[in-house]
Image (cartoon, rainbow, N blue to C red; front, side, top):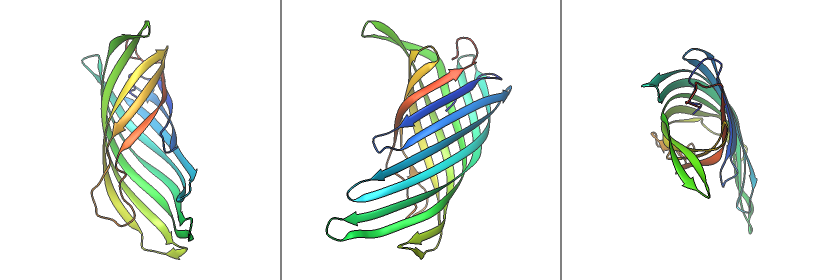
Amino acid sequence: MPLLTQKGEWSGGIHTNFSQNTSVQGAYAFADHLGVMGSASFLHTDKKKRAEDHDFAELGLGYFTRIRDKRVLEFYGGYGLGHTKRVERTPAEGITRTLEGNLTKYFAQANYTSKDKKTYHVLGRDWPVTYGTALRLSYVNLSNFRLDNQARASEDNIFLEPITYTRINLVGPVDFQLISGSNFGLKHRKYLKAANSVFQFGLIVNVGGQSGLK
């Protein structure tokens, strides 16, 4: 959710969660009302019951505008691709199942935020806070899918992802951002399913925005 406001503005961020899923995002307004955004996410864990390796990147093009000066509305569409692998195991049996495949995604997304800041006085200082919402619709395809090194049929799904986000200004153009929401799979699939929830936290920087709207 870059919340671009004018040509030449740049937004960048880094987020993670308690599952160690880390993502890096960036966006740039290359023209009035037109911007490009990209992201890359990484998950590499090795736990007792399972090991997961997930690498994914996406690129999108979009339109942004202001409504009544203090509100920002954005629309983006784009494409993503990556690779995923999960190894499941038990202490008694060792590896019980291995799943691996390639992912492709087409997505459309709408972001809406009021950039009026509400200020809270805590710990002896003021903390400006903004809130917003976003809705993403994604078509995802799992191809070259292998189960225990045996080829299986590809799967696809459509995901609906409504989220809310809160930004707390820390210093200058740097904000702390908290994202929470849900993810719904609109097709019944055995392997390509939605996560139960969306949760991430991290830092985001907006530089070059219109005065009073950073």
